[in-house]
Image 1 (cartoon, rainbow, N blue to C red):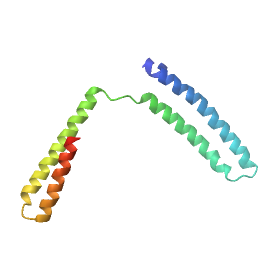
Image 2 (cartoon, one colour):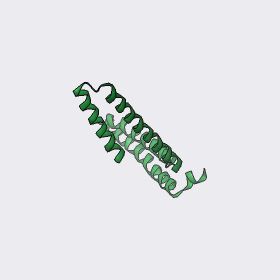
Image 3 (tube, rainbow, N blue to C red):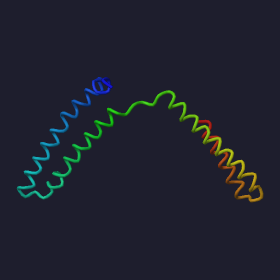
Image 4 (cartoon, rainbow, N blue to C red):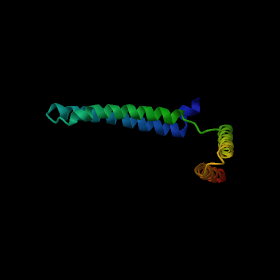
Amino acid sequence: MRSRWLSPKAIVLHLALVAWLPGCLWLTSWQLGRASSGNSLSYVYVVEWPALAAFGVWGWWMLLHTEKPTEEQIAERAAIERAAREAARAAAAIAAATTADDPAMVAYNEHLRVLAEKDQDQ
């Protein structure tokens, strides 16, 4: 847990947040002053800068808590994708067997078979 908050990546993120939030607050107050002196467009920025500050906090949090997938997770995803390709091939074979009389359907199923083979090669 300590490495999440005190790693080099985390320290850079903390410093970026420390610079970002006061900047957004200062820009909000500046735009509020401009809006109160008659610049009606500045009212939009009075809302925008706090929203950008909130987005910065959200991004800081997500970057701290997002981790790389493990080798096990990568292997599991690859297995799921292989199973899905096999199921698609099986469904195409069944469809081809049941619609062998319709020339349009035969051409369509051939197209699906070619696509499935291309996907398998990747």
